[in-house]
Each structure stands twice: as C-alpha cells, then as structure tokens.
Image 1 (spheres, helix red, strand yellow):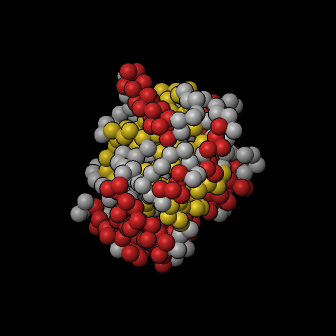
Image 2 (tube, rainbow, N blue to C red):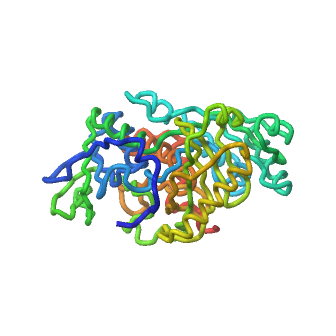
Image 3 (cartoon, helix red, strand yellow):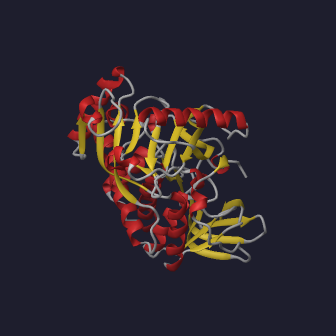
Length: 415
C-alpha cells in the first residue's frame, strides 16, 4: 500500500472511537461497486445509496485511513486555476460551468452535513484570497471581474479594507462568499454510517487484485482472499491514478505538501481574525489558513515536487517552522506553537482539473480522481455526475461537464 502521509495528524484525535467494518468473506453482488473508502469513495457511496442504488464500497485498508486523514478541510468553489485563466484554457462557457458546479457541490456538501445526526465540524465560511505582491494585483483584479461577471458572491477589498479587519495589510484581495470548512475525518466516518443506514455495504481490509469483464458486460472483482464481487458498474475512487489505468494519466503529477495545527487560541485573541475567514494567496505554492472549532489554526503549503512523504525529522521541523513563521507574520499577537505536523502526497493534473467520468475503453467503469486542491468539492461533483451515468439520467450540462473532465479531454494533449 502506497504511503500517503507521515507525521502527527490532528483529525484522528477528534474521533477517539472509530467505527469498523467487516472484510469480505464470501461472494457478493450489487449494482455498483466503489473501490476506495476515502473522501471520494464515501461521498460517492452516500450519494448512490441515498438515491436507491444497491452499492458496495471496498477499502483495502480502513475507512478514511488514507489521504482523508491529512485533508485540511477547506471547501472552496474557487480553484487552483483561476476562473479567468480557465476561460483562456477551455473557453468561457465551459469554465463557468465547471466553477458553477463547484459552487453547487458546496451546497450539496452542506445538505449532506446537515442530514447527519452529529456535528462534523461543518461551518459555512467566507474566504479571503489576497495578492501576495503588487505584481499579482492585475491578475487578481481580472479574476474578481471574471467571478463577478459569472454571478458569484464576491467583493474586492483594497489594502485599507483588509487592514480594517485583519492585523495585516495586503495589496488587495478577493472575498468569496459561499465556501465552508469541515472536519474531514469525522465527515467521512459519519457519512459512511449514514450511508449504511441507506443500504450501503462497506468492506474494509478487502484488497481487489483483479478486475475482469464477463461476456454479458458485467464486472467481476476478485479480492486477494479469493472472494468475488459482481456488479454492473465499477467506480474507482482511489485518490490518485490506479494501476488499472496503466499510465494513461501520464499528464498528472504527485507532489508533497506540509501542514501544521497549532495550540488552542483564546477566543478573544482570535477576534482579530475577521469572521474566521479561510485565507489563501496568489503566490505559488500558496499558504492557506483556517481555524478549527476548538480554536486551533490549520496552516498548510510549501509544496514540493517530491512524490513521497518524508520521514526526515529535520525536514519536517524546518517546514513546520516556516509555516508557523508565515502565520505569525500575519497574526503577530497570537501565541503559537505547532502541536500537530505532517506532510502528505497530493496530486495535480497538468491542466489543473480532476479526472471524472467513464473509462473511454471500458464500459461502465468510472473514475473519481480529485487531483488538485479542491478534492472534497470534486468528490461531490463526481458523485452526482456518476449517479447520472449509472441511472441514465445525465442532463445536457452533465454531459458537457463530463467532456471537460474526461480522461481523454483535449486540454491534456496541449498541456
């Protein structure tokens, strides 16, 4: 199993009693099988089972045991690729359709969280996207104009607007409304339990080692223990490129990112953090910040072109110190220590879009691969697109979005 993160994670400490699920011990059959029990797999399992689709999720490890544990829980409709840049890349109509679906996905995530019986740390938030330098102002203003023209709830703040609300001053910023934050670990586990009540079957510790297709078109998944699952549809929600694609997503890259979670801050000290906005910047790689329900601060960034997490303690401490220093520079009055710190693998496609849709050469086999910084949002977009494919109910906009995010999309040929 590929190692996805190292260090001391925060989110698992917030859920001391973790539900477990049995491994597959006999043959099974369902309409759809989802391979992967992380954020993508469980959102898809929740959406499909809630719609009455007989669904099975198989996870070779534990639910939420992979990248979900290292997810920092920022849910934003804006993406690593600006809307204004995406318009130049794929055209105005397609770029706006993609951004609108990301905004819609946050509404769907809100509805899912509201339906759960316990608080999973889901809170609606606004985001402050600030210019890291004066040189970034022209592109930031172009982005504001593109977002405003598309009808998003955005504001443009001048330096004095920022300084009036935060203890720092920046050349300019876009405020986006309609974002959210969540405890990703609690969210996935609670989604799983809720989906089970809708009929979802979950098997942990079940490694699928072979996938073949019967003459009648049904799919046969073989576990390492010799058990068989038969299904009409198969969804690969394994985070990043599965071996089954045999390198067809060679336009994607895996990198390494760092994150810290601080000690608990006094509520009075956080009064200087306007609206507990989520913060990020135009520099690449970018710093991003959010608060938690117990008044800690999550800081992440310092991305590196390294595929594997590092076990080098000196490297981790050095990056944690840099993140803490960047955070302290923005909020000098806070008394900050890094109580949790980790580094993790994350994926980026060359055109900054996720891979969602049906395998071009394998009928009824689908992928939900959320490359980029908006993995949770992409997971919800994917779940509803794949539900439409499985039920045969895709709309015209669905089909257009599937073309944009397809494994054979034309933007990859030119990237």
